[in-house]
Structures are given as structure tokens and as C-alpha cells.
Image (cartoon, rainbow over all chains, first blue to last red; front, side, top):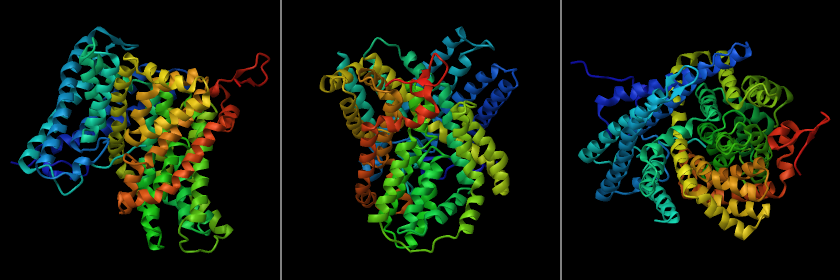
Length: 185
Length: 446
């Protein structure tokens, strides 16, 4: 059997002990989708400006832009969960060792899992209700946008379960930092 | 249960979970979900708020400004701007420290993100500073402090988020940020000159060396001109200006300056795609938090508390808000802080009859200062890590630099006419001016 190997530059090796190789292609796919969403909405904003300058605006481009933007945000949130790239208030957990570390890391991930569950379940309810509202001018059901939340929630739940199981089996303490330092301000 | 108690539970859950290591976006959402269970609001509608929080056109600018920074950094184009800074100011006492500040001012005009600034400076100039004997603690403190200018000098992601959520002119906030940005830069240069390490004294660059460096830096330096020029002439919105800057880098800058980097562009887009989703998912969660805060009448509670003490005096209101935001900025990330507390800021702006752009600039400067204050001084944490020095050492060396920020914040509060001078003359509508009925000039609120 050919082992599944993702393009290595799209998969973060930090905290490898908390990851299954099997899910590496999924991380790579989410990263590729992030790039596609960014390129997609850059292109649609560009075409939007261009068609307005040419006095024949394509109004549906704004829907395309917001679709790429919303999906990019929620899929990126899922990718960031696997890569531990989210914004954190503190790195207290990293200074704790032994069973307290296991307890805190487990608790943290259970909280994330609970939020992910709400994103999936209540997001799905919103998705179903979204078939009653439409986006103008294409009249596409707004459910097409709301679907991003449960999809993201499902991926976040999957990646969190992966970290929980591996954390319990191998411990949460690794050689690298518990999360990547990615900052924006 | 009273609204006050629900507010306390929501806030404590957010901070408690956040400091236990739950990512900010999830700790915010968890706090809101628990609070929702204590109110008649349905859970699906709160989850829907995650979507509504990012469904704002102005926020589209954020990915573009992050992409500009990512492309410029990964294509290694910024080295030319460092060279230009060297020829301009590298010969004075503490030359490399001055270069750090001057380069940050240039780079702030491109990226709008402190993190990109810290990353570039730590991996380039910090190495040279170590060789010249600069104390690593000082290096980290200076890099972190200088990087805050990215949030003040336009384009600034904080200004985009503030403008989008507070319904304040983003162009006005951009222009209003120039004065405090330059003041912070001058303050850091003055401090480095008189109190910083001396470094190696180098000969002054000749005119031809300067002209050569300026010529080589021309292509990257056009980017701030595109961004601000486009916005000020009314040709582009901030989002479109960001897009045009991206197109310029892809079509002109990278092919002209680093053609081999073209093959790396798909990876840059993937990384930038991830990069923008992280603050925006936090924006989404913070919007739901802010919505619940408003539902529970939190803004009324806080603004009543402040207005009882400050009355309608704008100075006192601002000082109390600044004091609150210095504390908030110590513990909470700037972007969620802006969104969560926006209803309170808006209410107090109204009570004190303060110009919204002025208030925005003061809040943004205060939150930018929060990037170098413990325990959540993210720019300082990052600089200390990259420069390989203890956070506590960098913190001690950054304490004297706090004076620069206190002075800048106080200046912004006491001299609104100076802060608003550029927006008033360049983009009068942004600060509430309107065209005179006769068609000549503008009438502005006093």
C-alpha cells in the first residue's frame, strides 16, 4: 500500500506527536483551500473593481467575494486548529508538567470540542433554515454560506479528537512549543 | 439571574478559559454560549452571529494588507528598504537602533501588521545588532516597540477593524494615525540616541550611496503611495487599495526584484490564507461576544459608571477609557478588545461629544501600547523569542520606552486638533466636516 504523503511544506511538523500521518493530507487540503479562497476573492474583488470602472458591473461578483471570504475564514480556522496556530491569551500550559498538564490540555480540548459540537449542530440548523432566505441578485439560498460553519466545526472536532487521543497516548509535552507563535497586530 | 451576573460569568469564562490555554476564538464563543443558556436567546442565533461578525465589507481589507506583508517578506524585497534606512541614519550614535525605527516607519506604510515587522527585524537587523554589541534585551524591546507603529501608520489592520465595527471612517483613522505613529518613531529615536547603546560608529553615506539605495528601494516604496494615494484621492476604498497593492507586488515588484520567487507564490497564498483566517475567526467570536454584551446592556452599565465619574467632560472620559484599555490591552488581544468594547466606546464618544476619529486614534494607540506590556505583550513576546532573550529581560529594557507611549497617548488626548489636522485637511468628510452651502470649503464641527 502506498503511504499517504502530503506535500510537506503545507503540513506543519511542530507537535508531530499529537498528529496522525493519516490526517496530514487533510491539513494540506485545508491549506490549499485557504490559498484558493484568498486567490479567489482577490480575483473577484479585482474583477468587481474592473467591471465597475468599465461601467458594466457584474453584481454577482460581490456574492462570489463574500463566499470565498467566509469559507476562507472558517476553513482556515480548522487548519489553524490542527497547526495550533490560533491566537492564545497565555502559554501557561507549556510551563506545567505531569498530570496537571494532561488534565489542563484535556480540559482545553474538551472546551474546543464542545464549541465545535455547537458549530456543527446549531450551524446545521441555521444551514437548513438558510434555504428560506436568498442572496441577491443570484437568488442562491443563503444556506450556501451558512454551510461553512458546520463544515468548519466538523473539521475542528476531528482535529481536536486527534490531538486528544494522541495526547493521552503519548503525552501532550513535546519538543516544540505547544502552539505556533502566529500574531497579527 | 440578573444581567450583571450573566455578564460577570461570561467575562470570567472567557478570561479563565483563555488563560488556561483555550484559543481566544473558542474561549470567547464558549463564554457566549454559556451566557446564552441563561437568557431566552436561541443557540442557533448565537452561532449565526459568528457569520454576521465577518460579513462586513470593510473587513475584506484585512487579508490584503496581510498578503502584502507576507509577499514582501517572503520575496525578500524589504532588504532594500533596510539598506535605504542605513544610508539615511546608520552613521549616527546607535546607528542600527535608529535604522530599526526608521525601517519600521517605512514598513508600517506597507504591511499594517506588527508581527511581520517583528519577524523581518528580528531576522535581519537583530543579527547585526548582536554583532555590534547591542544588549539583546534592548534589541528585543526596541524591535517590539517600533513594530507597534504598524498599527498607527497607515495601513493599519486595527484601524480597519475599528472603522468596520464602529462605523468610523477608515480613511480618517488611517490619516489620524500618522501623527502618533511619527511621534512614537521620533520618541524611540531620541531615546536610542541619548540612552541606548552606542554600537559601531560608521561613516556617513555619500550622496551617491544614498541615491543608489533610494533608487533600489523605489519599487517597494511605491506601495504606501498606492495605498494612501488611492484612498485619499477617492479612487479606491481601503479594500481596493489593498488589492491594488497586491497586484502591484505580483505584477511589478516580484518580477522586477526577485523573479525566482514567482514559483513560491502558491505557498505564499496558502500561508496568507491561513494567516487572515486566524484574526477573522477571532473577530467572528468577538462579534458574538460583543452582541451578547450589548444585549445584556453591558455598555450602559460601564458607560453609566464612567459618566458618573467623568460627567460629559471629554478629557476625563478619554483618560478613564485609556486607563481601562491599558488594563484590557494587558490581558486581551487588541482585535477582540476593539469589537467587544465598541458599544461602550461608541456610547462614551456620544456622551462626551468626542470626534469618533479622535477617539479611535486614542484607543488604537493605547491598544498598540498593549502589544509590549505584560502579560499579553505579544510583540514583545515574539521579539524576545526571535532575538533569543528572556522575556523578563526584554521587559525590563522596554520599561523606559513606555514613557514614549504615555507621552504620545497624552499628546493625542490633549491635542485633538493636531491629531485631526491631517484628516481634516485631506479627507474632511471623515471627521464630520461637510461642504459649505456656497460650495467653497468645508464647515467642520468645533
